[in-house]
Length: 422
Ligand SMILES: Cc1ncc(COP(=O)(O)O)c(C=O)c1O
Image (cartoon, rainbow, N blue to C red; front, side, top):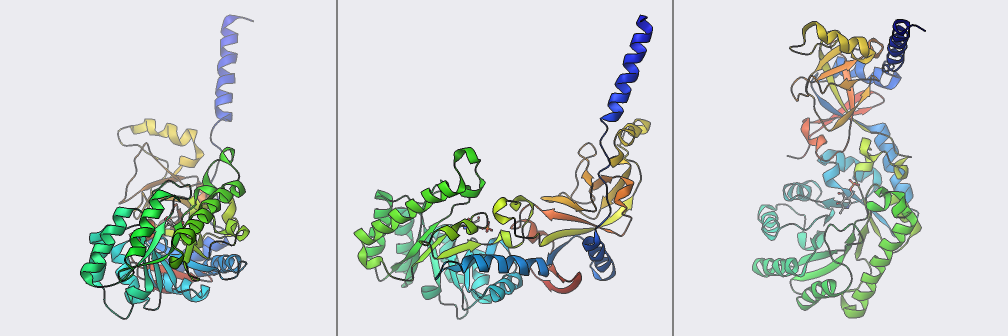
C-alpha cells in the first residue's frame, strides 16, 4: 500500500474509533414519581431550592428499623437528632417508632430538644466541652429534667473531673455515659486503666455524678473493605470490647451496675447487623431513615431514598458555551451529546448527586456556582424553564439545614412544611 493511502486509512480509522468512544446519551425524562413531584412543586411549591421529605418512603424506612430492633427483646431505638435536624421531622419519626430516645450532638440543638421533647431521654453522641455543658444549663427552660433525662458523654478522666466540678458548682447531679473505643479510634476509652480511672471518679462522687451506661459507635464494621474482615467478624470484635468493659464495670464497681443502663451502639450502617447480638439495648439510627446517596450500602438495601433537593430551572441556553472560547465551544457539544442542552438552576453546588431527570451533569470546565449552577444534559432529559431538577443529598446533617422549611410530601402532594433547627 502506498504511504499516503496508509495514512489516510489510519486517519479514518482513528476518527471512526474516536466517534465510537464518544459518550453515550445518558439522558432520560422523569419517571412517573418525579413527573408527579415536578407537577406538584410547579403548581404549589415555593419555586426556590427546597428539601423534600417523602413521607411514604420515610414510613417504610421507620417500619424497617423498628422491625429489626424489635427482634431483640428489651432493645430500644434512639433517633439521631443531628441527622434529622428538624423538630417536626424528629417528632414524626419518634411518634411512628414509639420512642422517646434521642441522641444529640450540638448544644443549641440540645436546648431546643429539651423544649420540644419534654418527655425525651437524651444521650449525647459526643463529649461536649464543659463550658458548652454549662451553657446548656444556663439556657435550659421547661419541664425537661436534665437530672433524670439527660446523659452526657464522658471520654477521658479529665472530662469526668471537669463535669464533676461543674456539677458541684451548680449543686446538681449529672448522668455520665462513657464513650468506648470499640475500634473506630475516634476517642473514648478501651477497657483497662482509662476506663478504671473514669469509673473511679464517678463512683467516688455519687451526689454529683451518676453512671448511666456505655456508648460504642461502630460504623466501620459496615464500611471498611472486606479484606480487613467481614462485617460479622468485625462486629464480633466490637462486641468483645463492649463485653470486656461491662465485665470490668461489674467487677470493679458492682454498685454502678444496674438493670436499665443505656448500652448504646450502632448507627445507620450497622443497626441491622446487631440483630446477631443481645448485649446492647439501645441502637442509634438517623441518616438511614432518609437514605442519602452515601448510604447506598448493602446493610441499608431495604431502605428507600426519602429526601430530595428540588430546584427550578431558571434558564435553558442550548449547547454548552464556555466563556472566551467562542465557536470552539461547539467541540464540546459535538463530542458529547450530554452537553447539547444547558440549564442554569436556582442555586446549586450542594453536597448532592443529580437524580432526575436522568443524565444531568455539572460542568467543571464552566465552573460550579451556589447562585446559578450550570447543568448539562442531552435533549432526552426533556426539562425546560420552570421544571424542577431533583438531586439526592449525599448526607443529611449539613444539607437539610440549607433550605429553610422542609417540604413534607405524601402520595406526591405537599402536606406540610417543617422548620429546621435554628
Ligand atoms: C455516636 C454516634 N452514634 C450513631 C451515629 C449514627 O448516625 P446516623 O444513623 O445518622 O449515621 C453517629 C453518627 O455520626 C454517631 O456519631
